[in-house]
Each structure stands twice: as C-alpha cells, then as structure tokens.
Length: 391
Image (cartoon, rainbow, N blue to C red; front, side):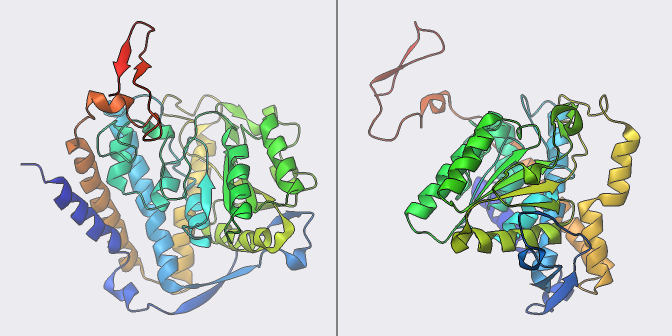
C-alpha cells in the first residue's frame, strides 16, 4: 500500500529539518572565521572595498551548506537515473558539479530577494524551499510536481523564484525588470539574474546591463561559466571570456564557483553594494558541470574524460568544503557520514513519493493560462479545428 500524500509530505518535512547530527547541533550559536582559499578578480572595484578574504558564519549554517550541496547532488543523481529509466522525458539539464553556486547565493541573501535563471534550475528551486519530491515529480510530469507536472525541467517556480526559463538569455532583462519593481516599490532587496557563458553573447544581455546601470537597479547579473555552451567551449564562442568585465561601465567580480564560501562572501558583499545605490554588478562564477549539457549529451565528444576526472578529483565543491569543515574542527567525519546517509534516505523517499504521484488530469492542460476572471469562453487547441470550452 502506497503512503498517503499527507504522510509522505510529513516524512519529507521531518527529514528536511534534520539538518545535522546531535553532535553538530550541540554547537549551535558558535561562529567561526575561515580564511578563504579563493581570491577574487575585480573590474572597476577598489580591492579595499571589495569582498573580504575571510568569512565569519555560525557553525550550524556551515553544516547546513554542506547538507544542501549533498542533498542537491543526490537529487540530481536520482534525476539522472530516472531519466535513464525513461520515467523522465524531454529536456533535463542537471547541475552536478555546480552546487556551490546556488547554495552559496541562497545562504548569502534572503527569501525576500529574487532569483531568475535559465534551464539548469533544479538546485535553485530546491534552495528556494521546494521539496525534492515536488521537483522529481515535476520532472516526471506528475500531479504533485512543483508546477503540477506542466512545466517540466525548465519551468519551475517558487517564492520569489521566477524560473527556470527555456529561451537562451531571455531571462536576463526580465531580471532587470524585477529589480526595477523592487526599486520602484522601495523594497530593500535585490535580484540575481543568472545566465550561462553560452548566453553571455546575447544582445539582450547587454541591453539589460545598459538599462540597469542607467537607473542603478539593485540587480546582480551572474554568469555561470561552466566552460561550455552546449558542446562549444567558451574560447571558441567568445572574443573575450572575461565575462565579469563584459559590463564595461558596470563593475564586476570573478568568483571561484567551486568554493561555496567564496560564493557566499561575494553574494553578501554584492547585496550590500547593490542596495547602497551604486547600481548593478556583473558576477562571473567559474564553475564546471560534470555531465553533458543535457541528458541527451554524453558530454565527452568536445572534452576529454581526463579533463572531467581531473575536475572531480581536484576541485569538487562538496569534497573541497568537506575538507574545510574538517580542517577547522567544525564537525567530524562521523557527523558528515550521518548527513550523507540522511540525504540518501531523503532522496530515496522523495523518489518513491514522486513515482506514486499520478499524472495530472487532462483538464489541467488548459488551466492557469489566463488570470482568474479573465478567461475567454473558449481557447483553440493544437489545431484550429479543436476548440476547448473553459466554462
């Protein structure tokens, strides 16, 4: 007998709250200062006024960061397996290897700040509060998906998370528009408008830079440079791969996107900068995806297996952060193994929840197209002869 939706959600919620072992929890309230192993490259920013070279955070938050990255990788690995089982169809872009970017950003801002990104979005929506089960169910096109099974991999939404967008680069000016609304409403919040190195050459990106600087909008344009736009290396597609300088008159920062603490500190500093009235920034997160561009791409025809293995063994964001936690005595190997086990159990349970969720009813296909109260009597179907009555 399958568990009820309410029971499984309660179990998932309980697992989500088990952020760390009893040993780690006993250290709640303690803070630790950690020197950064990464440095920043700056564009039009005085180094004395840029991000710091160390971070000071509660030990509990540091452990939460580790937990988030481990859970995210488990989730994406599960999605990989479900795709190969043909339970997930269509487009599916995984962020295995890039976990430090979404985790570092989310810990550096609040849920009242906004995020918009492209189609490699599962990690971001998880960090915005979506359950693993709802994300996996969405990937499988099921009723309990975060967008009721109608959005799939590229179209997921959560509180102040505006997707998940499928058109290359189109989300960047939308991010500037969200920041314009924040400024107009006098909200003390910022927007992260993210895109990849493949989208960095889009004209609308530069138009957004111009408008944002013209009005000094509280927006951080963030390029996740994972070195390859689909199957083309950045060096073959861009005359300049210094993406953090691409804003010209907009100051920029290049960040080690494999170092979650470097991402956190840049985010903390960037939010203060943008809210001070100085306007936008351009961030470049130097990161790396271990898999292909999407599940249909083996990821080995345009780069060597040796390159991928080298990145995994020398720059993995989870292993690197694990070493930092152990070096500074923040936790123990045994505590981390407990977290790893909890993450596996959480995702295994979420997979079963997602599989148990039914497909949405056919009537759901034409709901939420119009704002409630503005729907016409009929809409056209897939062909002109097909008419669907809404009332």
